[in-house]
Image (cartoon, rainbow, N blue to C red; front, side):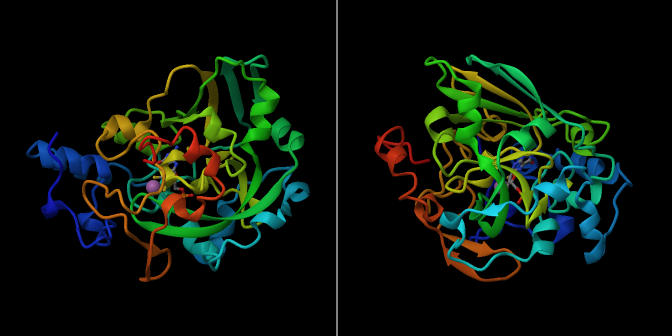
Length: 337
Ligand SMILES: Nc1nc2c(c(=O)[nH]1)N[C@H]1C(S)=C(S)[C@@H](COP(=O)(O)O)O[C@H]1N2
Ligand SMILES: [Mo]
């Protein structure tokens, strides 16, 4: 496949396109570069919805869904081990207004399109190679796992970062409850499919909905792997992946699916949304690696969300010590990314 050339990208490191009228999705750029004239289809898709809203800062609070349990559950107890992320926390309102959630928008403004999305009630089905397959109600999950707060650095493959306090629980605790069989080697995650509530699933037909991701079970069992239900001491707002999402701070952000409805234990390495869309750019492991450029930009530096400041990217997003067992094990032989 031909990669989109410099004509389509700001190759001076920062792949974010600030001029909204120029903005095209990662995937549509590929299409535009390989098929003349396809870009116009996307222009049509953008104008097809008129449901956009603009929110003031105070209104952003209302993006946090109301849920009976939330008063009791949030804020979670800070985990002392993850109290200091080594960088100042990002501004909450910046984080609420700058998202990747293609189910709602290909720009950074999903918060403008989530009005119809209903994260409660919510069910998560656990299936596949485990002894406790089950349909979990979100309330049962929230009551079964003590919620803690962890401040993590977060690195998007588009070379920006944020630093946020998540509330949730270790993915390993959830996995143990499911009692995976010895033959279970991978976890497959699937996000929701509700085209009537998520305009992107109606209009962005170039993508294979719903969003899907996968992890090796050893990665999923690493103590850093986190299930987030909250952020900044409250329930997740819709645009952040309410009611439940995965956070893997040593990997690029897209490895953490939002608003998940299925977790499957499998012996096959799962396909992933971005690997299917653009395999040369988005591998299965997708660990943060400054030395491995994206085909269209360098990963050596990253922009701090809310500023123009660029800082050097660190291998495993600076979490190398915490994933040492993985880089001695399954990441051996060049599987860092
Ligand atoms: N279901 C779903 N999950 C997703 C995405 C998405 O578009 N849909 N985007 C991914 C990407 S590219 C990133 S960087 C993070 C963004 O999370 P944030 O908006 O909370 O910063 O979510 C990831 N999970
Ligand atoms: Mo991302």
